[in-house]
Image 1 (spheres, rainbow, N blue to C red):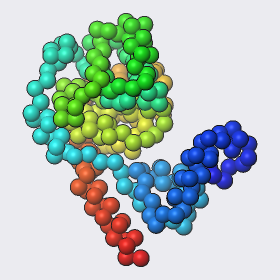
Image 2 (image 1 turned 45 degrees about the horizontal axis):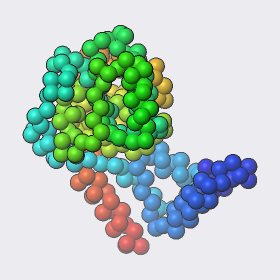
Image 3 (image 1 turned 30 degrees about the vertical axis):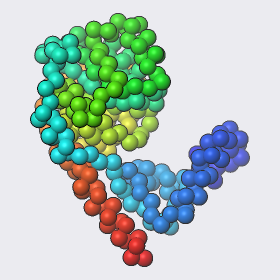
Image 4 (image 1 turned 120 degrees about the vertical axis):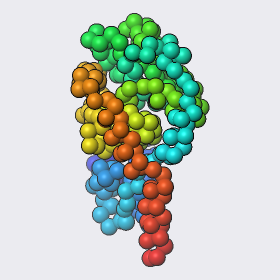
Amino acid sequence: ISPHAGGALMRRFPLQYFLKIRPMNYLLHASDSIFFEEQMFLKEATELFRLENKRKAVVPVGTDTAFIDKAIQGASLSREGIGFHPGDLVLITVNRLAPDKGVDRILTALSGIIKENPRVRLIMVGSGYQEKEIRRLILKENLSENVRHFRQVPEEALYAYYALSDIFISAFSYPGSSVSTLEAMACGLPVITTGQPWLVKKGNGLALESNEPDRIKNAVLKLIQEDRLKKQGEISKAVAREYDWEKIAEVVLKEYENVLSH
């Protein structure tokens, strides 16, 4: 919603307009420099908030690749340890359980995937107010044997779950930050994502236009059929290193220096 939208839109979304859009508009125009996670957000905000004359920079979300490498080396978790078979093909999603994160869409897709490839399994990591609905959906689709749900996983233990998986899925309803997608890439996983198309580069996975279950299902089956998961995971790892926090910190420091010099 633009702060310059007409009265009809203001009346339709009054709380969002007065409690979010108006204050955001004030802060953006009062700032000396504005950081955006990705070029697409910079472009969108520039148009919505009329920021043509403001100083802007792209500073993406990053990850600590050295920490992740060390965590993976010390990982001792096995597929057998969580009730899966070594020959299974394991998908993983790490997210808050809320409708906009699309975990329910992944589960619905999984039901269709299993009909074509019964050895596919899913690890879910995360908690949230959609948990009861998620549990009901697992029972409804008879997925109890195919899904393992871990509510609270400490960060230092999280990477072991990535390491024993084959494909990471992020099924956001709209584009947005996803540290978990970068973490999975740093762990060497190909990705299927609806919300972070800018992270799909050089053949490391698939970016989907929406999180419809059929799209997710077809994407998973396509990656399995292509049988290049290890190679795609290596590409993901190389891409993730472009988003290491040290490199991003350098960009931030330069931008601060530019602002201060004026």
